[in-house]
Image (cartoon, rainbow, N blue to C red; front, side, top):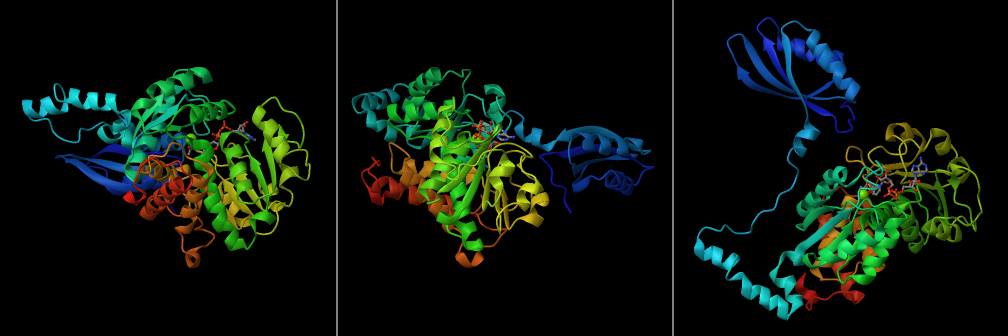
Length: 471
Ligand SMILES: NC(=O)C1=CN([C@@H]2O[C@H](COP(=O)(O)OP(=O)(O)OC[C@H]3O[C@@H](n4cnc5c(N)ncnc54)[C@H](O)[C@@H]3O)[C@@H](O)[C@H]2O)C=CC1
Ligand SMILES: CC(=O)C(=O)O
Ligand SMILES: [Mg+2]
């Protein structure tokens, strides 16, 4: 069985002398528990062969073990060890490319000065022309302050870049939307709002990403009010939309109704609060929130304004205590907290046919292998297990739909339409425990989400493009 790596896939460049057979290499790697994925010949010399051997390992200690095992063998020299994940990040993952070549002075005078000046003047006279004559029409800013990057926490704006570049790459690949990573060296909400407003003229939408709670709520709310382009905090709403899509399908398998579900959400931050709100909008009434200190108690006052809201809008049975107290009899566990929060004991206390969405990245609240014997349905945010509930399933299509309609906002109706569109990508007769959510690579998803979101934008009056038949 292939090892479940957490991105640790190595290329080992080996010089194998005449006295050593290649089987020595495979034996050394195999005995150390490495998983060989590919072998390439780089150079064949008189007395030696240089090969690149691609190997999956569990973690960094395991990498050292595999390298040590090879170094011990006579005739095998380890020339270099590269981490394939780092290799794909060399020099960054995206670039800006012109749409046409500039081959001569004539081209130059049209794409740049003097010709460009007339286009500038046209936009000056009618600012809405920016949507026709610039990249604004199809471009989104992916903005972070690096304070809640995946589950890694406050690692700062420079360290957040690889994730933001990744989001930009996915916008382009999945929906043809151009996106720029913008990592801000400030945590001050006033400053973030001011900077985003100042850069907004060049963009058709703002995707806020990995900004910690509770600041993310205020920042998003202010920007939504003050800008005339859609502002969408992906960790809140992207997560909520995909989670709802997964749950719509999961409850069909276990034959339960939204209104009867008892749901526990752990991690009452950006994703946890938005997930709670979308579940309530979909008809769930019994939700209990748990954070590090334990259950968010009904009616109690909290310093964090969002927890204060939560205390007034959840926990109808007034439960108190820890996750163990919250999860007794629950139908659904939603994890948007951190690694290892959920234990087998918790699963054993759940209602029949437990549904577990352990969505913390990169390491979920419980490993699927550990949970599987005790649950009916398990999903994670990861790409290397079935049932990937990750906001990548929705943010490309949601923005593509909003940009298509030239929407001024991404409202609740557009989000619910997106969730339903994602869920409906799986035909009813194909639904099963391992397949409650379509693959990120299912091309129908982005098309369906784009269409549903653009239609909802017209239906709710936020579309500004004249022709609803344009899509
Ligand atoms: N699968 C997906 O598509 C997505 C997954 N996530 C994941 O969800 C997690 C939270 O993300 P955000 O809401 O953006 O972060 P956040 O920083 O806004 O909120 C995290 C909350 O979880 C709580 N928490 C952390 N460790 C905990 C623990 N051991 N027990 C209980 N509560 C705990 C924190 O106190 C905080 O209130 C991250 O791991 C992130 O990677 C977030 C967005 C999308
Ligand atoms: C997927 C994502 O946006 C996160 O884990 O933060
Ligand atoms: Mg995120």
